[in-house]
Amino acid sequence: MGTSSMKRYAPIAAVVGLLGLLAAAAVWLLQRQFNVYVQASLAVGLLGLAVAILLDPATIQSWAGRRQARYGGNVLLMVVALFGILLVANYLVSKNTKQWDLTANKVNTLAPETIQALQTLTGTVKAIGFYTASFASSQTTAKNLFEQYRVASGGKFTYEFHDPTGDPALANQYKITSDGTTILLMNGNQESITFASEDQIDGALVRLQHPAKRKIYFLTGHGEHAEDDTANTGLSNVVGLLTNQNYVVAKLDLSVTTTVPSDAKAVVIAGPLVPISSIESDLLQVYLEQGGSVVEMQDPLIQTQTPVTATEPFVNYLAQSWGVKLDSDVIVDEYNSVSGQPLFPTNSKYGSSSIVSRLQNIKTVYPVARSVTIPAAGKEVTNTTYSTLVSLDPAAWGETNMTELNQASGPALDASDVQPPLQVAVTAQNSTTKARLVVFGDSDFASNQFYAQGANANLLVNAIDWATADETLINVTPRTPTQLTIQLTNGLTINAVFVVVVILMPVLVLILGGVMWFQRRRHI
Image (cartoon, rainbow, N blue to C red):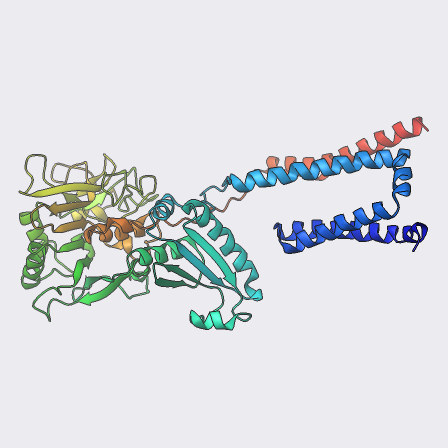
């Protein structure tokens, strides 16, 4: 076959080459991966152009000498240079990942607790997400979150996604029953989450790091907040955070048993309405003397069904044997409390304990609380160390005259009241028995009604972590997006915005358009 007859195939080869290059560019833009499809398309494109040049070099040479070709060549060179710059920039960015979170509450940034936990992982964590096409948006959200974990972990956290309908064998292997489920694997252990959020993932990571179950007991029989109650007065939301950390939560009724169970990592007393009896107090005393841990949340007597003059055996034991005194008062804070509610004080500052070290810039609120006092320096109980968790405003005081609370003039500080400064939460630890004690002058702060106020839930969860001597499980502070809205209440401001946006801006566009039209008309 002659050379002239082969020339007619040159345009076909050129078209195939151009289509191959276009296909390679399209696939790369869609998938952002230099995979086999991009490589094959690119090879076809280059081969097609090469064949076209070989078949008809004279035409190519003639075309290259034209002015249009030179202009086209310059444009092609600029396009190639642009793509080269983009390719290099994309490579550099992929190798040097940097993110900026411009949201008010940094909701798109992993919490410091999460980053610390990722950096101390004892093994590689693999997340396997099972999402169908109908959950595509949820998968995108999960992927963005998992990518943050991957980057922060330095490669210790990896992830992949599968369609359970397209890969039923794998779904059956991990017992997937609902769409959007993610399985996390580490060191042969497996955890499952049904929603990809930071708190859910962190809870699974904690359970993977600490696979052993830890049991805590909530005291019952005295009108305490119930751990399984979903009403406002219940503790179900905080208990949910505890179960995420692999705790097993159970009830403890000391009126029907003669001892605290040996598997109790801690006993939680969540706001009894009537005093704990002397017999039950003795059982708790034995438990503490054997190295146990107690988290005591005790409300003011006016909130309970106990007369102000009644005795509180366990409260008295804490004062006598531990030096931790729950004062018979109600805290009044006129300067640092929930607006218009001086009996709802908020923290002024936190102590240095690991319980509150990560809550320093987050408020906590205590609806109707009593103050907690620890011994002054030099007067501590032998072998006992103390720590203040939550201090109140320097002007807050403990009102002891309950009748003043109902007077129209309101309560006032006098000599008979508990003088400032006040604490509402403290810890104590016996260096000999290793027993640990956390005492709050309020229990409502952890209830379902108030647990989401600032760091309320985290404070109790962290306190239980400390009481069980497992401070590595300090809870991650939840964050919610701040809703930013513009509220224009001033009539002059509203009118000014209307004039600028609705009238001036469109008129300005028309004027500029008219000027441009007039200038062109002058040069015709």
